[in-house]
Amino acid sequence: MAIARKDVQAITANLQVWLPMLLLPLILGIAVPLGLVLVFRFGADSMSPSDAQAVLGWAEKLPSGAVAAALAELPELSQRLIYVGVNYMLAPFFLLIPLMAASVISADSFAGEKERGTLETLLFAPVDMLSLFIGKVLAAFVPAMALSLATLLLCAAAVNAAAWPLFGRIIFPQVNWIPLVLLVIPAIALLAVLLNVFISARVATFQAAYQLGGMVVLPMLLLVVGQVTGVLVFSVPVVLGVGAVLLLLNGLLLWQLLRRLDRQQLFASQVR
Amino acid sequence: MNGTPFIELNGVQKGFDGRPVLTDLSFSVARGEIVGFIGPNGSGKTTTIRLLNGVIAPDGGDLAVGGFDPRHDGERVRRMSGVLTESAGLYPHMTGRANLQFFADLYGVDEPGRPDELLAEFGLADAADRKVGTYSTGMKKRLGLAKAMLHRPEVLFLDEPTNGLDPDGIRMVLHYIRRLNQRDGTTVVICSHLLQQLEIVCDRFLFLMGGRVVEQGTRAELEARHFPTVTLEVETDLALAGSEYRGVRAERVGPGRIAFTVPGREAIPQLLRSLAQEAAVYSAAPVRRDLETLYFKITGGAAGE
Image (tube, rainbow over all chains, first blue to last red; front, side, top):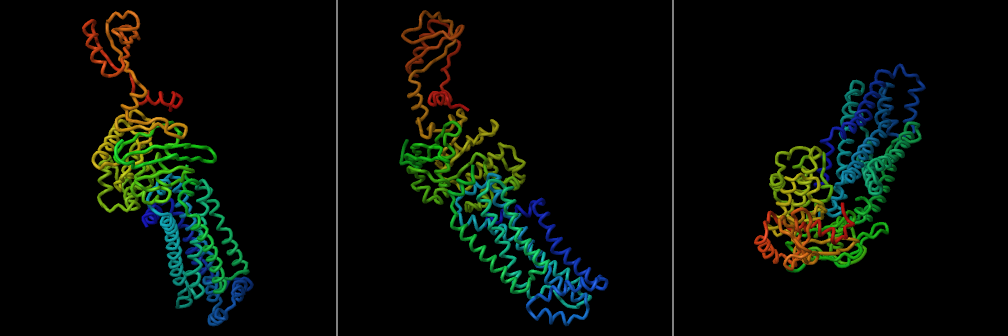
């Protein structure tokens, strides 16, 4: 726990670390959703019918009839656009936020330890490798989750406030966000952390770890592209499917990492 | 050496990427001893500390610290040992106090005042709330030492503990090591090539070369072995005829300076008395036989910094 606490304090104490990390959630998690609501709220009437249909038609790909029923109850075009927009188009952003945050923190936490020459000191301490590993994972996972959930709360507040005059009720998030928040976001944050541990235990420098770790973002971008092009819509089954794949990957990585959790091997490969 | 060995190595071997570092390392250290581990860079001093703390594994041989094999009981060994690594291993973005507090938590130190006590002891109380990144090399070294002592270890492994320290800092550190050893009976292994400093504080010396201990002993034992005779340089107006003076080998080494070589310290008073009766004696000093001279004699003069 001491390690996790120390790492979290290091993040919060260092403006250069957490300020850029806040920027992405602020833009993707708050500014973009708010902008989306405002554009649809005030600009729906001036949208060409084909554009509006593109957004709504995209929602028709959703398998459940619940969305169609919900949309049928909304008389205004702007209401339907906002409802679909915030509930189904924002999901990938909330995958990128934990992914980026967990990558940045964990790359610093592991490779940084090595770069500062403090890994040697840590390995000289009477702390078993499992505790060291758990402490390090928690130190990146907890702040990444906190940041993601806080962003989601702020996003919900902003979106519902901006959409209130049109709806008079809370419209975001809908039920499809439950598996996203409970399953996919934690799973993706954990995956980013575990991958960074895996990578930084094998490469020499912080830069190399960071670059390789950044490659985790690529599959996520595919999800975003899939979402935007309408190939993939974040319905409950899709979210559950993505969650299951992520859990499987996490399980595999964890198994590999725990199997190789060896102080002497780590020391020999990482400490000069 | 008295008592059962606290640290014991027998035929330990260790290599990296096919390059042998330790070929046949055997030595022992008694509980409560301060031992100087001397050898040129790359001779395996740091590797030995790492092996003894179980953070790397030997390729062969046996080793034990406090009765535990670091390979299998590394946790127990690390619990009783304090290590100062060459780089001190501190977090630059944290204050001195926060660093000590973190390591106190890590080592399970259950004394809330311990970090502050050590900060004061090492003259860092005023800098306790400054980030370690702003510390001088000497301050970092002292903080690293304080860190190694947090959990009151039974054995201290110090890798170049006085590197980068100013004379005041060196005196403070050596004084502390000596006091700690006398007060708590802490066993101390100091790796260094700053030999003059080791002379002040160590009970015994181990010379490491070619991956094994090539010589060891107390200062007196080493001197007796390597310097069977004593050379005394005397400033005198004695008129020396030949290469002998009353049966003692003598050689003029400069204007008014003669070097006398006697079989041992015991012969010095008699020599000086005789000299004083026959001529004026202005000064007399034994020719330098410090650890450095010994070191070069043992390592064949090839291994210097």
